[in-house]
Image (cartoon, rainbow, N blue to C red):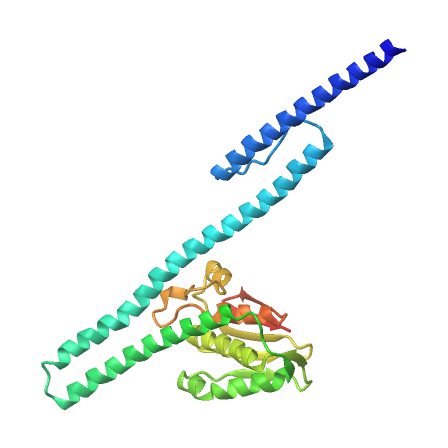
Length: 290
């Protein structure tokens, strides 16, 4: 009987030693592969030779964390590249009008004719207005991304849209555009931030007037969906896809940071809405719904 117990204990000891060996081996494999993954940009995941359930669960848990870490790394790298491009673009956009201002000031030093002086001061005013617009747009964007909350009140979207369009009446007429506006008589109401909603409409309208080929259409449907459209045959599919990207400008527009539609998208999503753009037969459509 004693011999039998000794044999049983020996077998158990051997089995435990084997199990401990494979656990130790799995731990070493996890350590090595984790180090490889963290120190390189490889997409490999942790794979172990042991079939021990606890060690497999540990490897699976680490793989989940590694996938999340890789995703965040890609976001960071993309944001880093985007920031570098943005700094380059903004520096160029600000330097261009600043260079013009300095040039006109140099010319004014040697001019005594009042008519020429008036001409150059008008050009300086124009360039300073461009710089002011650029810096204000950057300031608004920094405020929006630094504050994650919006106030909420029951609004009639029809009224806010009509008020915003009325505020653009002068700009629209000066652009030689006769807008086609169709606002449903059915009231669309929702709990939204009025200031944010007005900003969304304003940014979309500004973008449409800037790049329109001569027309501008606005429609608020019975179901509450809002569509802004204008002909824009020069827009490529890549342009449409990137319209809401930060700092993206069509044709490298020198009087815009490319933040208008990005701000509109941030505010729309923050209030639980949806916004997207599409191009059909040379016409750009920006649609949103709350």
